[in-house]
Amino acid sequence: KQWYQRREESEDRREGSYSCKGISILYTNASGFFNKIDEVKCLLMLNKNIDIICVTETHFDNDILDAEVQIDGYTIFRKDRDFKIESSKKDISSGGGSIIYVKNYINSSLVKESCNALDSLAVLIDTASGKLCIGCIYRSPSLNSDQNFKLISFLKNICNVKNDFETLLVGDFNLPDVSWETGCVNARP
Image (tube, rainbow, N blue to C red):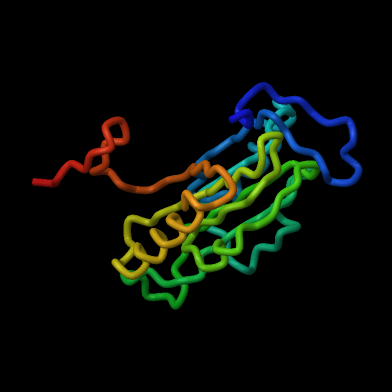
């Protein structure tokens, strides 16, 4: 596919019809993003070619407004933690959450299944080769089996071979027993 080739920009960005042949993606696990957003903004001043920013473990809740974490020139998509981890005493546990920023001139939309995902979300963007789904995934190591099943269902939906788009996943899966090089699961003693 051509979406990973060198970036070529369209001259006409006015109608939001921009698609890119190559995209530049920044991913990080923030473990609390509110006090680190200025670092990302400084990085963007040094590298203006970053098209998409994916951040896991934002630790946001609905008390933090989009305007407080907006980055100029980017459309914001976010999924704050809205569920309880069993070990937590609160109705909604703190931590978790993900956010995706997409350059304003790239056509992008939230994947509707993201509404049901735990701490994760996905966006569709237009590229020269068609649509590309970018999933920003955070899997808490404290999820129970029902919560894990819900996250797996979300991943199956966005990675389905019947979809009319390619899928790229970034994130923190917290699966220490998986060998990502071999694809094998190592059993614990």
